[in-house]
Length: 309
Image 1 (cartoon, rainbow, N blue to C red):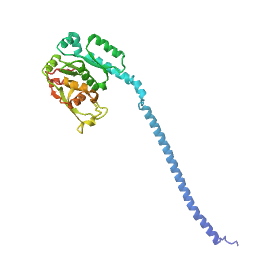
Image 2 (cartoon, rainbow, N blue to C red; image 1 turned 45 degrees about the horizontal axis):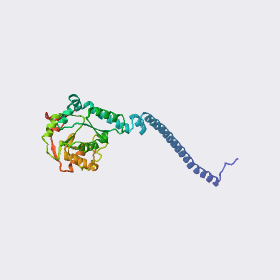
Image 3 (cartoon, one colour; image 1 turned 180 degrees about the vertical axis):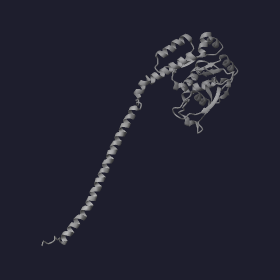
Image 4 (cartoon, rainbow, N blue to C red; image 1 turned 120 degrees about the vertical axis):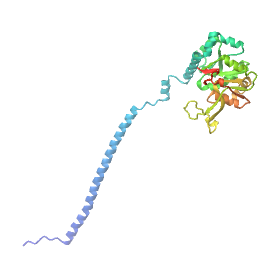
């Protein structure tokens, strides 16, 4: 009779130990497989997301407007700074000719000579082109030889941003050329009742240090890019309000005030606007402020001597 297979105690111990060590290995292998699948899935998903984002970015870049360089902008504008200033001067001159009520009146009735016989000198004030001696300068010289109604500021370059300096040049040069009791600055978009203005000034004769106009004040614009922006806004205090000054549409200075501007021209500071600049100069002297509503060109008064064209 064959004997039953038997195992020794040592063999049973070895097999038990082998089974115990293989179970953790299987568990570790299983988790490693799961982790590999998870990482591979995330990498695949990230790759898809990156592809999607890249496509969206490319689409947005194609749709967004082109960013212009400085040279591109100059090409779009069709001019450089010098050309821009010349165009602005030409536009100002054209506006003065086409909208100037005074110009038509002088041409039609020869009123210029008649007013000068009464001691009233009337001129269109203009500076020189940024490109001295160009066609614009030549055209102005030619017209002035025919009409004799231009007052050319030789030392001033005509440009919109130079208006505060222009008004200083005007008063300083005018007082050297004409010995008058009053000097009047009028914008080129203003229609004037000349007889009414002359009558107003005749009643003020003999009044020294007179600073006459439609007195006003207003907000100081501190935000760059907005209309009427004032680069020196911080100088006007926390309230950001301009001091009282005559509107730039029409303002009048007596002879001694015009002389003051001429004598101190080199040291007088200009601000962003011509009327503010004149007002700041008048604050430093013993000037007499005369607020005359007839000089408020945009008002609805029937007896005003000026109006917006």
